[in-house]
Length: 240
Image 1 (spheres, helix red, strand yellow):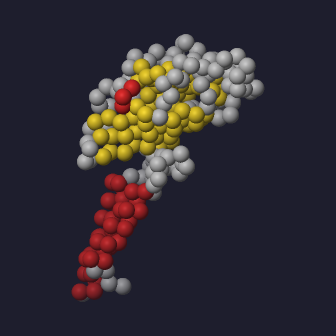
Image 2: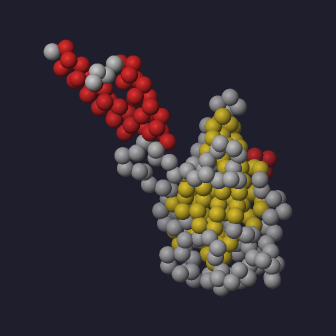
Image 3: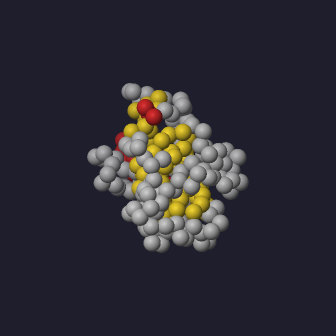
């Protein structure tokens, strides 16, 4: 089989296009705008809740990052989903949900999708335990009262919002943490009955995901280089 330059170029392009989408942690979500998928999943696996059972995993944060070169803005869509026994909590010992974004300082004008009667943005979040200092935080300011459908001092199990900033920006982890590099931190109520934090309250962190061995554009370029070498060897054999 003879491989032409144009045929190889087309094959290489197809591999690169397919490869870019291969190392994906994306999931479809009906609550997102059309044709958009969540990009990266961060699991809350750092358990610093002293009264919670070891191994408790309260949920995950899904984040999509989109850069618009025309408007020169970056949009971050956050969807933080907690399991049925976990709730966003306002204990007073730390800001409810903490995160970081590079670029200009965020203001409430940069954020959409939040109910201001429930959450407020702060640029000086109160660290939870020793999970480090984050650039921003959302405080649960209007918790449900006793006897409500969720435990007292909590704000439900789902947090969704969009932050838009100028320039090509990225997520920023905490600084000074003592439990590994964390991308997010949260203060959660762990409940078995939905009316009280009977299984404990405390801070949890979502670590920065480790790299996938062999994944990414450099590996794909290397693979395409190997195909190019194979094509050249076959051409030399045909000439000989």
